[in-house]
Length: 193
Image (cartoon, rainbow, N blue to C red):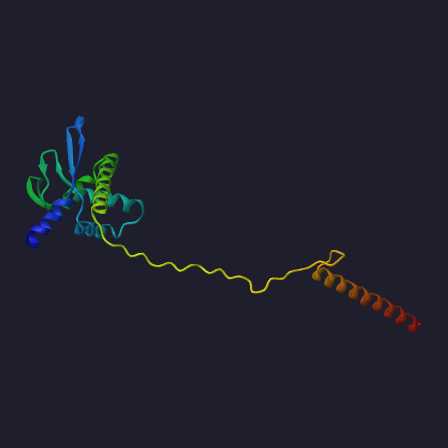
């Protein structure tokens, strides 16, 4: 088996299609997934558009490539059409993009939903049929910092901790300072008279 046969086999294996039928309207669409090159062209075509218009353009341009057949009409790379009595040729992408812009948005949304469903199907097929050894990085355990010192407050017979004793001592000394201040003020008043 040569390289050309291998590559053709890959393309054939992963090229799926989805048929969307609207029997009452007499319409059948054949959709195929996009190639990487087509996806890049779509992103390039939509790069200057923002917001809701961006989403609308992505749908329209994706469908312009994805629709390969409408009813029995194969859509080739170039489309020949008549305008003002003259035959013109335009790339399928540009021609279909222009036409899809005039379609009702529910139709575009439904076709795009079928297209994204097809993309999901192909992705799942690739994932389930592909095997390789995966590398899992070694996770280092998280070390939680523990306090080096733990204060254990013991209570004395009165039920006071060291902190309680210090607070009482500070309060006692503050009261003594207040008493001495009061005495000093009284002494100063008497001396002044």
